[in-house]
Image 1 (cartoon, rainbow, N blue to C red):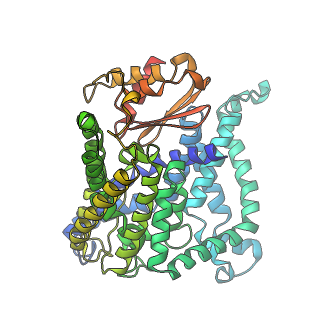
Image 2 (image 1 turned 60 degrees about the horizontal axis):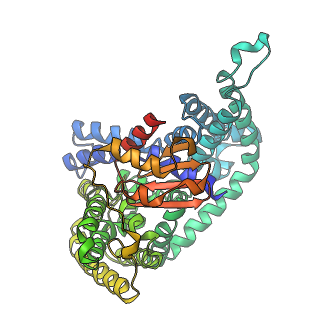
Length: 480
């Protein structure tokens, strides 16, 4: 079950990767017209509306992205199935449709049905579409129905499954929605404490790949919070000084805290291993600072020093708690890096974005000294502090873009092509399903210069490569 949820989380990275485009367009539009948000400038309105085309359709993007990501061969037919499922469910359970079923006025329909087009339904539709695709893509029908055999049958089966799902949701969605709203309301009611709890859990769930599910509740409109959407649109429901509280606390951590933590790990590395550690830590720190992509850095010590990662999660929660108390609100479309910080300056709900500098500098000091103390006090095996007998083999130094050589090492470390059952990748990791776990050589994989190797089960290996993971994955696929 855990593996299944991890695959859903990985699939969500496909549509999430589209969000930076919206961030750039929104940023340009708000810089041109920071007060009217398009009403004072046709050019600004053009950019803002273009961004809205992405942000407003997040549920559809999730339906398509999850459906493609969960399909065994990522075929486009699965994307069509996911879209069919989403359209069926949202149409059958729209306020107008439910009012017709009940024979009442639309004002008497439960509010839950007014929010049926949301990220949760998008993800559910993607799961339905991909499940139908995986199960029926090779279906053979009698000659008189042969035209609908194979992949042509997928959309039809999906439609039937979606109708059944809509019937079930007709009864349980109001209960689910009420529960989600109650959870969100409880967190909102906790104010700064709630922000801190959310941010800490966000980091704590990253090793499991389940943080996306938590994000859907707070960043999108699943439970009526929609922190991300309201921050950028300033639509009804947005409150200056409140909206953005579930995003602001990540900026001091990703732009300042983690890079400072990387510096602490570098300074505490063994002298003979500083050079090798610096390459890994520098790349991770730059990715975290500029783009907010933290996995390459986090995975470099997450399993080497899990206690330090727990400290990192707690510090993230404290950052969110403090930032919620301060008169500062920032938001992002992709992650809390420099790019999104600059683009969010003129967003409708932005509040004192300049305060990130002093707050971030203080937090950099906190991360540096806390990390350095914990590492040295408990002798944690962070990068560059491994036991000498663990690294006797000579490292093979690869050119930064020598993806073919890197792929060869990774594939060999996974036991060769005969040991690969299934291969895929997400934002930063190559995910492999293997036949024989005893054939995996982690030391060989690490010679490729990857950030880490994770083995969630005997049949699963995850290789943390970083932002260039696609190119390494593509080279391995060629070799297969």
